[in-house]
Image 1 (cartoon, each protein chain N blue to C red):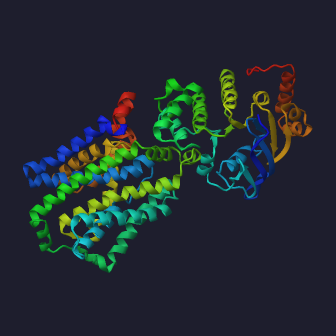
Image 2: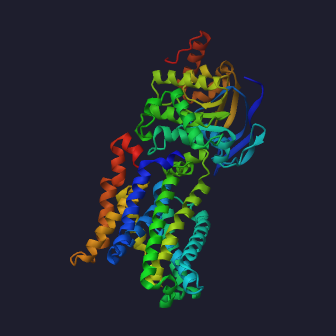
Length: 322
Length: 264
């Protein structure tokens, strides 16, 4: 496979792998927590990018996959006694299946109507979970401390979860790249540019969009399970935070939508910025205000984002940077 | 040209609310022919194209392509059967390169090719329509004439049996028209059947084997360019636009003198 030999792919995978393994080597828990957040955002943004960047459908409810996956995985671990890995995979599969069912319906809508429907999905799911007994209703679920023994105690459970996240992030990026450079990805991008023209060209748009939507749900669901396992409890307010969806969109736009590298750079930069704002007393309540301003500035002045801007510089860069 | 019928339109009617856009239209296209579809603005030509390639399902009647009923199928399935289309209003995939645009056509067209092979077909088609030097440009950056060529290239890359050309000459200058007509003739030489809508009378009269005339959604005439241009009903249909009627007659004169230049 020629496209697997692309230097751009290996550069970005190597960079993320090095950054990801670094905390494992020097065993710094603070560094690990920082990286956990960054990698989590990289995965959320990259998976959202498959729908938003490649297919051109703005999803304001991407976080629903993180929340729903988190709940399913957490339920399997805490109530059914499953191990983290099979629980995360099962959560991802169920969430993907649900996304495929939902996608078949809401993807009939286009543009602003689709975007509004995705807001509705997030709120409806939150309302459902808040009233769903097996998921602990409004108070959520928590994990008994002893459950971490299976992983060699709480401390090593955290490291184990983190190592899994590094792997999941790398796989997400690889999948994002493979989708982008595949015939399927080309079809998605044709849909993004002009859906009706794409159908006349022979692209089965309803099916392609549904697959993209389902695929974009898989990785957030795994990350949701990892995140809430690490947290030890899950509740509706944490699982379905609307502003995380919006922050995901900011990260994609910042780095460059529709590119593989863009969401990585966007997530890293945004997470650092967010960390700075949250820890600076003057700004700590204004983090979302800055996110909004940032989004506005990007859309007005650099609509293609950082990587997109670079790609526009020359045809050569366009080929190398993905 | 063979006598084999490739596309059969049988009593097709399409209504939009109270408006009958296409009314009981029937005709057939033979394999390898160039059939011109003409008519005043609003005659239902583009609507008929939309029915043929699956954008709309007809309210009545059916469309038979290579012995198979295709009316009612979605456009992506019609494309797979081997009908490609160049749009009247160009629809380039702006943020993709010229090459990628054409690869989409090849990869998702009749033969459903994998990417590598589709890229080879695309390269060949770009060479053919003269867009090869621009292959790495973003499609949105092309000028109008180039975008028209891109529409054509994308449709050709699908390697269709039948190609629908919707006013591919509109908005081109005389030199570009002549060049485009050459491309149209060469497409036919490749064995692809052509159904074309065209307002540029001298061009469509020159290039078509037969012509179908629509007016207010109904077929009012069909025949060779000469027959159609002399048909009183056709002249009447264009009389709402006296300049057009005069035009028709002038071009008819030119045809008889054998004047085949695309510049008049």
